[in-house]
Image 1 (cartoon, rainbow over the protein chains, first blue to last red):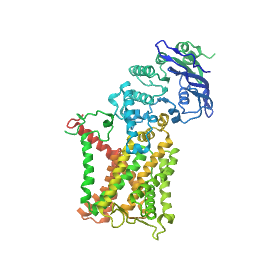
Image 2: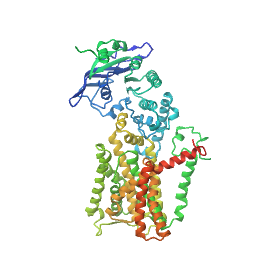
Image 3: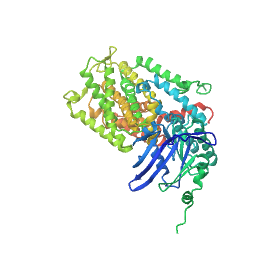
Image 4: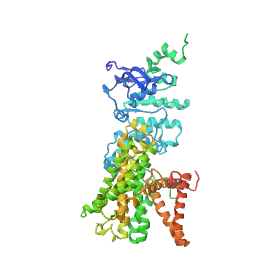
Length: 272
Length: 358
């Protein structure tokens, strides 16, 4: 099961390492509804892994299992060589897994800067008293983390809106701020739930570039869900295809594209 | 105009993160502090202390406390009166049990005790939200008032069921009891109000404050980011109740001198403080002061105008006062739901660009 040995280098020169996240025989049920049925796949260090599938296939549920929001009834989640027991989402976040949401989940009452700073909460350890008096560690940490956040702000080119309340931003920028908030945690695994949903072509191009840059410059492992096939096939190293809670395909974009089950799921198949 | 950001360059993240980034705001803040500490104590008389400044400062502390819980952490509470009663009875028991220890320590301890009680009644917030939580805190309000009425130990078995503040001194000046002077009462409230506001500002701009606001704005996303909802909500209840307990202790010991729990800390008090933060502005320290000032000053102003100015009978004036305050609250909610703090911010934004409209 351990594939730590077969590291390789992609055509564009990125190093893909061993398995970071290993999902084994995951089954997730809501009452009588089986959302995910016996799915296994892995995510490897440094790769961009996509999960695709028709609506209702269980992609978001899968992402919620990875991020600890749902605990599967059956199966094992292995992260960095350790089996992860049932956990609260905030504990999973502390392991180094960050995510964005399909419907933007920013903190509307706070500024862009504060939103991104919340991404670094787990790195700020100042005690209560230090914070109440704004003395010593609290102030030092605030400035250190602000510097880290400013790097991300530069990286995603949102300098001009850093003091704007998030509620006033247009949709595309909100998506970008949400990515910034997830990046601020310097995650080892970044989960993106439909990062390009509802965007126009230009915004999609920008977002694709940012995702590639994040992967390339920070070496962040990324797992994303996306409906735009062009985007998925261009971005990802490997693709998992789901349909009705089952895995029907897994492999490189080319392999998946030529998989008969996948074609049937997407185009429909005549029942005779 | 001098009210400008232009030319006031920030060269460090420290100066960029300060509370008053605009120079004129900073000067205004220092000027207000200078007048509050350097001028008012020398000119204040009993009327101004008892009718205006002391209640304003005490309610400002309570409003900051409730604003942390409701405005910053998003947990609605109707238990403010009950928590103030905890502060009042705690300080009374401490004052009578340990007469040799400074009242300042007693007041802080009373805040601490209230914080513990607040955390206890905050536990339901982990399961319930919104209106349902409001009802749960309402239960705290009624339970605490009932408790302080029912158990004679809390009021030292006094025949009247009232608690009365004995004389205590700070730096040889009586601040409680019948001999306390107006400047002494004013100064102890001012020092505590400034300290509370400063601490509240520090907490809300740092990590803890971001956790509270994250829980308020979207609790699921907050948890996925790594906020422990249990710790965030309970710390909000603790800090909020700490401040509210201090306000309750001051209200009883310094302002009222003697109190009966149902009358002084009833449900009306909970609503009064809630109105203060709604009118002042949720999630704003300045708004807490503005709301407290508004609801303390307005009745005084109306009474002086109607009774003193027009010579109307006092009972008529009192009724009109109720109607006017009620109408103003409704108007406020319709016209500016974000409160005085937002009006103030809008005015400053306009001023920054004046005389240009955009």
